Image (tube, rainbow, N blue to C red; front, side, top):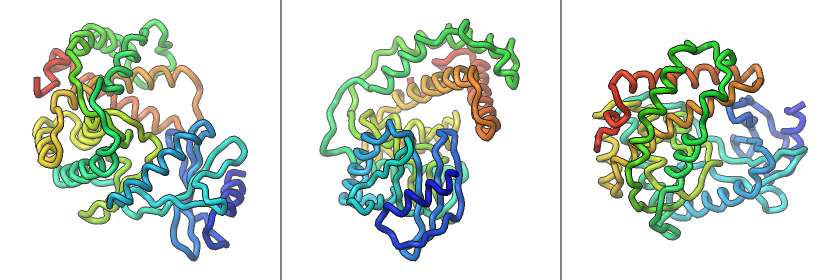
Amino acid sequence: MIDKIAELVLSKFAISLPCSLLSSNRGLSESFVYKVSSSDGIFALKSYNQFFATSLQSTHALLHQTRKNKFVLFPLIIRNKENATVVYHDGFCWDLSSWIPGSIPDCSIFNLVQCINKLAQFHIAVGSEQSRFGIMPAMESRKIEINSFSISAINFSAIGFLPPFNLIELLKWIRQEVDSLMAYPNPIVKIQYCWGDARRENLLFSGSEITGFIDYCSMRKDCREVDVSRMISSFAGDDYLMWTNALNAYSEISKINYLVCRKLDILGTIVSLYRWLKWFQKPMPDTMVKPAIQRCTEIYQRIDKWKEHGSLKSMLFYD
């Protein structure tokens, strides 16, 4: 059924027909992504919840601006026959973009530094004209989610893949430790458009060369440290030398607050654990269960290693 819908949506874009649906994928966001072949080239067709329509159109305009500023690692957005970039159908909105070849890079410092350099270039291309200084939205939202989380609201039998006693003890430890971390004064930083999902899984390489950034629908105004911390963490985990080398590489292009990056990463990881625990309270599609368990387990194990260090403050590195 969804293949037929995809074919109907494709007919509304300004590309040559017929098209072939070479493959499809459904991620944790529950979006469908199709690889499409046409005589005009290879494209990516992606579905979104219709509530993303307005922000998606704004993101498309932002990507167009970054291309004008010579940053071309994000896909080229294809317009439809009505000269718009979004097609609506049956409760979903869709966009079509150029297909970027490549595979997810391994976690080497060489790959990380290359990606960090490109991220700094993206921040310059997208943000310099509309930036301001202020309090970090990401830091404030993390504090709100952490303060609103309640252990008593979690049914631990729904999370049987994690040891319940250890999980409860870890959640109690987080609660004891996190207040001191959130008590740090938040500095005024540069606020501008950011990628919003700058992680290794959204980077593509061919051999030793980066070919593209994908998954752009989380773009928003925030501090650059949000993107920097997310990218480094996805490569380095808590490897101090990799963090420092990557932050130094970014700072050679544009100055960044090292301590803010680590604080955002630590609090963001805690928020991620809280979200996954709450998502597992409700049924999810069978296709989502295995990757969801894997992701939740990885986050749990990372925080459990922090606990072995004795305090969250000890993980800040640059305090």
